[in-house]
Image (tube, rainbow, N blue to C red; front, side, top):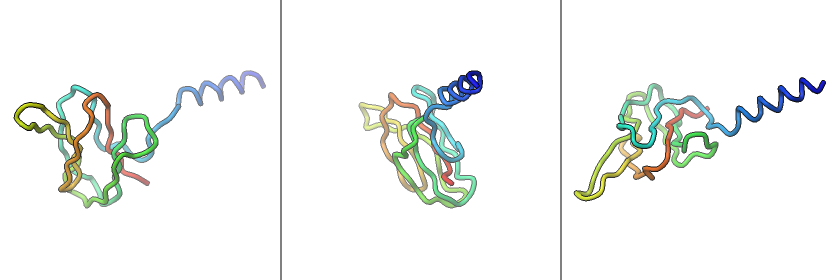
Amino acid sequence: MKRILTIVGLMLLLTGCSSPGVLIASQDKGAVPKVGTAPVDGDYGLFIAGQSQDLLDFQLKAGDPLGFDRGNDGIVQWLYAVAGNSRNRLDITQNYEWRRLP
């Protein structure tokens, strides 16, 4: 019985907090951003990697732009979350994920 409790405890520790849904695109801090497309119609959420609460939520159609992009104001370079026609500026010190929500 003690061994079963130890295994269950380790499984809970290793799984920790995770984002729901299916991973579609990820952006690690410092990596070159890419904009792809939504694979299917549905609800997509932007998450800080490993978090369970989304920052943004969009209904997209298959083929709509989805991912991450760079931009600048002539002085400072920014990271943006891209979903359809929307561009939202992000904190460059975080890792992010776009996920198709259940």
